[in-house]
Each structure stands twice: as structure tokens, then as C-alpha cells.
Image 1 (cartoon, helix red, strand yellow):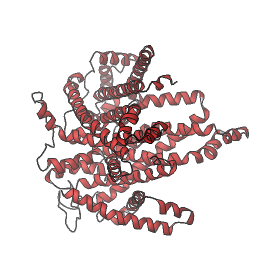
Image 2 (cartoon, chains in turn cyan, blue; image 1 turned 90 degrees about the vertical axis):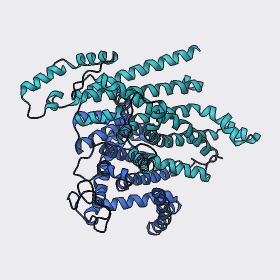
Image 3 (cartoon, chains in turn cyan, purple; image 1 turned 180 degrees about the vertical axis):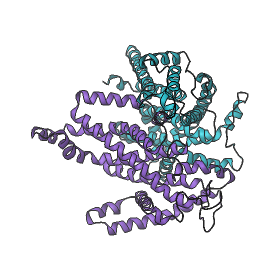
Image 4 (cartoon, helix red, strand yellow; image 1 turned 90 degrees about the horizontal axis):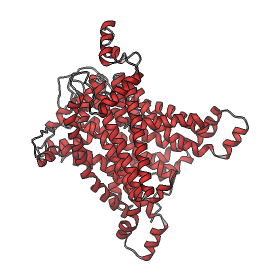
Length: 317
Length: 307
């Protein structure tokens, strides 16, 4: 168990380092501006006095490392600063929306993961059959579709005739069932997009394994195909499949942005898009940091889990 | 239900079309490419046909479109009729014309962005593989850091900082995408720079630029071309999504993403017109994916040999 512990600690340290670098990149991106944020925000017509006042207010008269440190310590204590557009504390704006976005992502994941695994395993089992071809062509098309296309097709088919609401209104007082019903269409959109990726990758991982000698051996022994896949191939395919799931959950993070806008879902993605068009950099930075951290953490978890399922990975350089 | 019937009809019509396209292609092409054309799967033939149609529409847009791109030629949201075949949009502009011009704008911008990303990404990637040492380390760690942030999120962050215009859009997406190209190009390059012929050329005293141009690029081209297709799809979808969010290509330029956004209200009234530009986006990505799939299959050759 000792080696496992060291491995996990190593990965955690690496993850923390990545998070640190990510925060530097997100913070430092504003430094790329020619001139500075204050003059960009105020535009050409601003007088030098107003620019100087805004610079002082934003703390731009401090050197960048000092500002970064103040920002980072604030974020770690849950204080994201104030929005440039609305003057409200960003943490208050994020609180409810973060919960909504996590709810939507988990909802989609709960639908997508089992569906994708079953479809992927069946496609690998019956590869080159009609089912496989149809599933593959369907998956390839779903990957190629922009999210908003799928979303509007679903609205056209399911919302326009009144089965499901096309705009999501959530309130804290709603019961779980009501929430699930209200956010069914955005969750279904995300599910369709993500399932396609996951199914293709699962199928590829299992087909890859089916070429190995021990599978050949099992087949020669006369083991049934289903048993070969479930007992022999699947345990060894776990590492790639866990990776696939993590990659796609990470993909949900970006998919959520477009889908939230289509369905007017009160989540982080919509707030981010609004803030981008208002050029409210403080809010965008905060949300980008949250999304990027979730992404890094998911990848980290996947890394640790897939190493645990396949001890050979422990000895890699 | 209408959508499903349309889909079935569309597939039913595209099968004989792509079949005859393939047959025609096999007849017209020079001999050494004939067998490739004859052996290609129907999906790939379909893909090539669709891409060809898009390119033709983009080039001849002013001749094909019945109305100018930006002119208001009718009232708002006119239904489909004989003058405005697909009706008019929110401002009374002809939908069909804007759809046709959109091929030029949306696809053109996506193509330019991908090309830029490839130019920068693959040159840096191959250079890193060739030179190794601190250049490789520095660039790779820098790219690692950028890739730790989801690309759409990073693009949104950069667009906030630099503002939204077509030029910043191209530069931002190209920069984000170049990191992905760099990774591929570097790993492909790594496999090539250890070859004996590179060593021989080095001993002959050839410079880096010669090595990249004459020795590495020709050998790295096949995987990079397939990657180009995939990256194009990705860039195309990203730009469409950003335009859809109102942060990409700005009006009055006709663009498929923003056309969906502007006319989306029609969908809730059961009108499919706003789905058409989205469908145009989807059809092109499907087509490119089909062709890339075929190319990858040809390159590996043993993908489905199992069982």
C-alpha cells in the first residue's frame, strides 16, 4: 500500500502545481493587454484623471505579483472580488449558479455514463454488425453536431409540442422531481453529445483489448463472447474507460456553456457568456478559474483511479 | 415527426448520389488514384461530395444568391414562398442568400483559423522535436499549462480581454488550437528525428530549416493532414458556438451560428428555418469526419482486423 500512497501524494502535488499555474495564466492573461485594463474599459474618450481613478480602484497601481497574491488569497477564502459591471460581490453571484451547473452536469453524467458503457460494450461485442454500424454512424454524427443544433432539434421535437419546458426556471423551493423534469431537455442534450464520444472510446478500448493473446486463448477454450467481454476484457479495459469518462465529464464543463444559453438555464455558463459580452473581466476570471479547477481535478481523479486499476502504470517514469 | 421523415428521405437520397459520385470520380481521376476512389466507402464519397459542394457554394456565392447578403428585402419573418424560398429573417433579409453567403464567411474564417493554427503549431512542434533541450522543455511546459484550461473557457477569457471582432476571434482560436497542434506535431516529429536519414542530413551539414522542409514535413504530412481535418471540425464548431453565443462573427456579416441565434424564436412556433444553418454546420462536420475516418482507416489499415 505504501507505493500507492506515494503515487497518490505525487499526483496530488502535481495537481496542486497545475492549479497554481492555471491560476497564474488566468490572472496573467489581463497583462497581455496593450496599455492596461482601466484604459481599455473606459475607451478612447476617457480623461487621464478618470483612468487614474479607475486604476487606483482596481488596484492596478500595484505591481502584478502583489495583485496576484491579493487575488489568490481572496479566492482561497471564497472572496472573488466585486463585479466590474454590477458592483456586486462575485461570490454572491456565483453561489446559486454553481449549484445549478453542478446539478445539470451530474444529471447529464448519470444518464450518459451507463448508456455509453452499455452501447460501447454492445458495439464492441457485435462489431461490424448492423447495430455497430448504425451506432457508429449515429455517434459520429452526434459528435459532429454543434450542441445548439441538438438542443434546438430537441426543442422542436419535445418542447414545441409541450412535453417538456424549453426554458428552465429553477427555484430553491422546487422538489427534486420538479427540478429533474424542468432541466430534462438541457440534460438530454448534454447526454447525447457526451454519450457519442464515450461510446466510441469505450468500443475502441475494448476492441483493442480483444486483440490480445489471452483473449484469443479464452476464445479457443470456448468461452462465450459475452463472458469474454465482461470477465476478461472489461477489467483490463477499466483504466482506459475511466479515462474516457473523466475526459467526457471534463467535456461537459465546456458543453454546459452553450446548452445553458439555449435553455436559459440559470448556471455559471450563462453568467460567463453575459460577462464576456459586458467585458466584466473579474467575473470571467472567477468562472474560468472554477471551470479550469474542475477540469484539473477531474483529470487528476481519472489519473489516480486508472493507475489503481492497472498496477503496471505505477512503474512508469 | 417531420424531422424524422426528412432525415430518412435525406439519407435515402444521399446514398445513390454518393454512389454515382464515387463512380464518376473513379472514371475521371488519373490511373494511380483510380483504385483509391473505387475502394473508398460510400460514407467517404458522401463526405468528399459534400465538401466539394460547400467549396463551390462558397466560391460562387454572389452568383448563386438571389439577394444581396446584407440588404433588407422584405418584412420580418416572412414564410417560405416563391420569391424568398426560405423566407426572411428577423430584419427582413433573405434567408437563402444569407445561408449561401454564410458558407463563404463561416467556413472561410474557420479554414483561415485552422490554417494559422497549423502553421504556428506544427512548425513550433517540429522545431521543438528537432532541437530538443531548453527550447523543447520551455515550449512544452508552456503548452501544458495552457492545455490545463478547457479550450472554450480559455477562448472566452481571451475574448473578454481583447474584445470581440473577427480578427481577434481568428487569432484567439488559432492560439488556443495551436497548442493542440503543437502536441501532435511534436510527437510525430519525435518519431522522425531519430531516423538515420535525419542523422545523415545533419552530418551533411544541412540547417534546421532544410531538415524541417525537406526531410521531416514530407514524412509527417499524412498524420498531420488527418489531424487538420479533425482540428478544422473542432475550430468550425467552436467558432459557430461562439457566434451563436453572440461573441464570434458579428452582424451584419452572414454567419450560420448567429443566424440560429437571431431566429431561434421561430423554432418554438414549429418553424424549422433556424435549424437550417445549424444543419449546414452539422452536415459539413459530418462530411469532414467521414473523410478523416476513411483516411485514418487507410493509414492504419489494421484497425478492424480483430476477430
